[in-house]
Length: 266
Image (tube, rainbow, N blue to C red; front, side, top):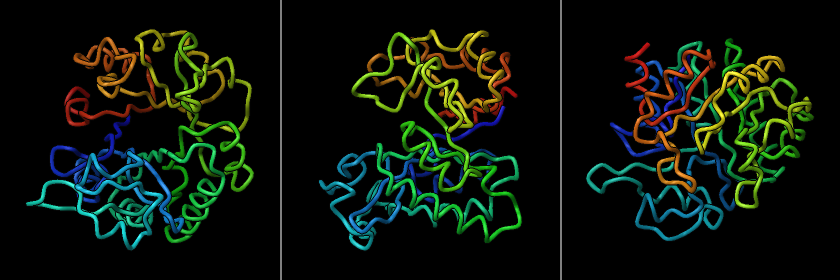
């Protein structure tokens, strides 16, 4: 089971920084990160639309140019970092990732085809720079079906992931990119199931069997990622119980805040 470090290695550096990514790659893990567009359409890695949680700047990413964003310090003042770009991440991923590592790109621009095509162009450019099959290691995920189709039209080789959640909870207005499997299972515009359990009822033998029958790669969300959401995952404080289930069910990967703890189990 491959392990993806959620926003990089939080033990050593602030989330979604090059230092956090490098630390996770050195330990042999894959990466999950978040993509947003600046005012001048540059792709940067930041989870929140507003910078105030990770810096002392109260502004949204789409209000700033890349040059302006690069003046913002994130993390502790004694050891500041800057918000990286997607090309900067791809440079270190190509140089430092193991051949089996996964890079999961969470496209936060919901239903924004301009952002999706910008991602496609960037990935194509970097794929041409390396001898490895870079696109086989990358998945663009948590997009709407419309964006999944747009990406596949632009380049069928780019792997697309749809977020799959509990049928009794999704879809809803707050989470338009999370689908019940029965709503999208027959569609051919996606390759990877980003299995996203919120209430403790999704990760069953039957669910993963259905995904295998559709030849989907399966990357599961570890429950601690839903420790502060509504609903809160019932196993958020004891994720090892779920890790054991995922290992037994043979999922391809898991995205977690505790990559080293899962690695120690394997």
